[in-house]
Length: 413
Image (cartoon, rainbow, N blue to C red; front, side):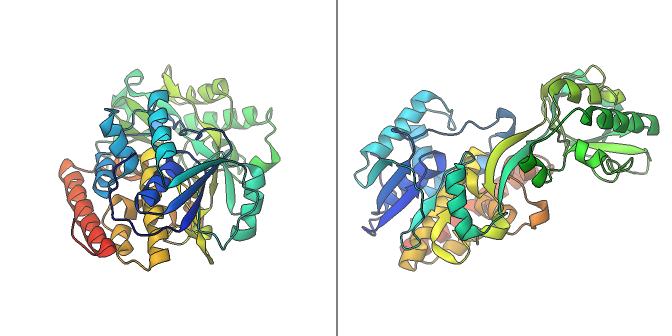
């Protein structure tokens, strides 16, 4: 059993729906704090963790450090068995499952939850593969049209396969591929011609995903007014530009989303001079990743609005990385305890730390700009954050978490 990180507080039963990464983490935190936890999962054994795209799962020292400061049970387990930074494999899954199964305060039930009961304190951690039947029940609480079923991922190129001298670097990690009018017109015509042979599912159309084919359907300048908007500086005034993000040998085409097949995407890339003969590491796709439209559904305690006993964490609330899911599971568990026992201190986790940054981009972001959120991809990695700033954020995180623990538990740790 994992060593408890806090004093025992309660014997109230908490229901956790979903036994993946976030569900297991939240259950262990609650169980370590004296709560009885019932995990409901559709498989006989806990379902294991979702495999996140390796190109979207950049390790962030800050998030790991914050989890260590919080006493994350799964981080503690990974260190105990020498799994460096949650190296996901079957053996590690088994260690987590064993810890959950053996915890005296946790029971696991192989069952589908068809109805939510707002009288029961419940954490919903069903992840990106949440079943449609359960989503229909969830709509009774969050309203219709507040569930997203798709999430676009960007094209990634091998940076060493292109001539970087042709790129316009504006910072260490940000650059632009500039297009002539002829190049731009060729890209537009190619997209329009390819799009004619596709018929997309109705639910995909309803979500109005911002893809290159969707932008091209607006007319000749649909692309140029969006992802190909020209970037002017004192040296260059191109007809069109495409923003790129550089991370080591990875070159990510910013906001370049498409539901086209791989060969069609490659044909489009070949119309851009700097990408001729480039090596593609990952093509864009509109992946099936169910998540809530968090700004519309959740408050800053991760409760479903107007239902204080229903909490959501993990991929379903809108996180796209495993460390983000762990942090939200921690925050959700403490938020539930604070609600039940009128505990103070949660406000310290809402600012000046990674949890605060994630909440800001999940809950406080405008609906129009909302999408699955990955802290390292979306903030830390692409704003030229210096090492000193990373260390400053660590110090700030430690200070905030110490303040939180002192106020929450009523004693200094």
